[in-house]
Image 1: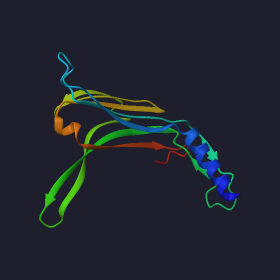
Image 2: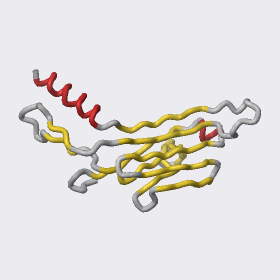
Image 3: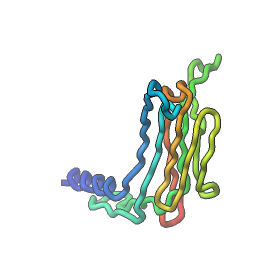
Image 4: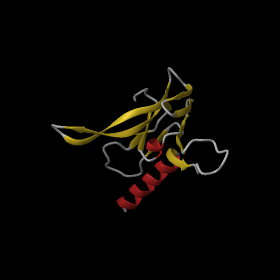
Amino acid sequence: MEKVLHAIFVLGLITWAQGLDLHLEKNDLSVPGGDGFCAVLTCEDNTNAGTFSSPVKDQARSTVQLINSISSIAVFKKVSSRSIDKGNSSQEVLVASVTAAYPNVTEMDNGRKVDGVLESRRARVRVELFRQEDCEAEFTCQVRGVDSQNTE
């Protein structure tokens, strides 16, 4: 019975918080008169404020604090690096971000066109990729937010 209640709790939490969406749309460069970019990467998050109470008893934290507002959203590109000491490793390099200090971004830099917006409960970064190496790269998206107690 407890497992069923826990599953209901998780499904309710998923429904309550719409969540993060990261997707890459490839563009056909062979089309004459095309836009010139090989892909568009979009990272977006929409959130609902509040708390969700767990129906599971004897749980250490029966209430989960949900994000009250989004404080930043960022897109990172995974870049492999070679080191004599460590062999092959990878690190993430910031591609684009919007924060409370810079809630709107529109720029063209390093073979990428970036548009981003940050609102209280919605954040979006859209990156047009013009270089083939970017279109074949691995990206991650990170969203940070604060709960009702202003804890990140």
